[in-house]
Length: 343
Ligand code: DAH
Image (cartoon, rainbow, N blue to C red):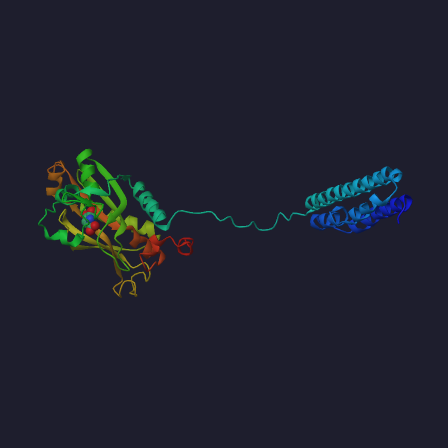
């Protein structure tokens, strides 16, 4: 049978005991656990309180006050220990030495897609020569895509173009050449435009994709000659590849130019000595070109007696491929970060 003074002494002892338990604890979780061990339902203080009922009624208020006191003491200690810990963490943080000479952590930022880089660069190079950017729709009329470029419906050249038809008269443009037509119809010479953009063909293999990117060029003025065409393309190749590469214009047929020529450049991999990329020839094809056919001028409202012009069209994927050794056109469109972040 306990008596009041003994219980009060035991309660005080519990207070001291808690102090000893909590002092070495250094994290909130174990402090809370210790708190529960003393103040919880089955805690040490609660155990003592069970004996309260066995005391003579007159002693109970005194012992009750002692219980409240020890509870308060424990609560206070928990509180102050937690504050101490938080302070220590803050102090440690402030005392941390920062080595400002350490290299910065790389920031994982994005960048322009390789094809976008190549397009912007190509546009920039032509801009230096006085060309401005022109645009046209990707869903285009048959007339702008073919007819106005002297490719009537029964013309064999249509077979070269594997067209996606939206309807009889509407197509996905197979080349950027209709932008030539739109430009000539809406602005009088002198004209100097480049038109980069997506084009579509029913074609799908390692070097062809149903959608790809071309850049078209058109210059119309009094006295424009084939030499201007060659000079423009040569300058472009040298600037784009930043090397002294030659070009050659190989006679070829495109219905909308006369004469027409395929544009080859010296292989940027072997500098023209012959390798796998150029199949040992030293030359790689980069596009088509020629002098605007007077018939096209007629269809587009340009005075063929007064003006001459040159035009060219090149594939931008191919440009990027030749400069960065990309061997499958699919890499450009798959969005694989491991591929893209190399550029
Ligand atoms: N449009 C042609 C094609 O995609 C390329 C081309 C050839 C464009 C000759 C031209 C040109 O402007 O003069 O196959």
